[in-house]
Picture 1 (cartoon, one colour):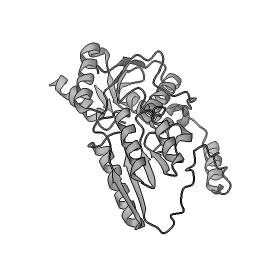
Picture 2 (picture 1 turned 90 degrees about the horizontal axis):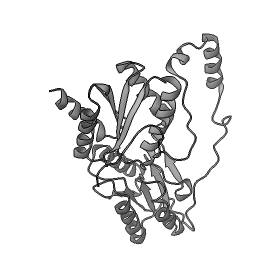
Picture 3 (picture 1 turned 45 degrees about the vertical axis):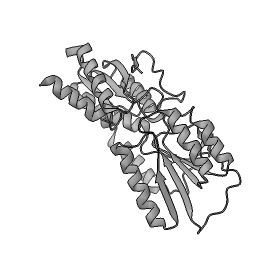
Length: 288
């Protein structure tokens, strides 16, 4: 059994991935296809990329929103609040640490992290609403739900507060910029290729994610499905379950999948920093 990283909890089979957004998928080249490319073609492509400069590359169209009447704070004290999906887990402890280090380096920036202790979009919206009334200059966020969070972020923009997302996006016009840690189709390729390497190109797998509407994981899973169908058509996607970014729920969900599918299940994908170790624990205890 392999475990890959990257209310009653719901489950969903792979016939249709309803948790994904409505963006088109862009699966990368299959692993074997990439290895079979002619060296001359590779060399030409590498040379072309090497000669390219930032000025030669077309900048993508800006599709974000704008803070209405935001003051010019150049050289002045700036107060930010960070509202992640939840607090108290290692991943967002790390993003908080990075923000504090950046603020100290800039010198005129103060940033505070505050948010719900569980991945609850309603609670996250309340934290952002409170930040708006507190008079901060900017809000950083990682969305639990891209659609539900949009109105309160637009409210912040209308109040002249800068809004920047990271990790998990909102609707684009509800924030100014989004910092993406990795391309979703790249994450998908690595995870599915690793499963094929570990368990073969006809492996049967299941997924433990946070929620079906969490934007980054939903997009990763959509790209995983597209890449798997393109490159490993004999693989079988058994089921996807929600675990709410909760260690116990993740463990219980992984255990349920192990018991439900038995020897038919070759591997589990953990889509969060909580689901991955908890799923691994379930596999280890199940094999004990």
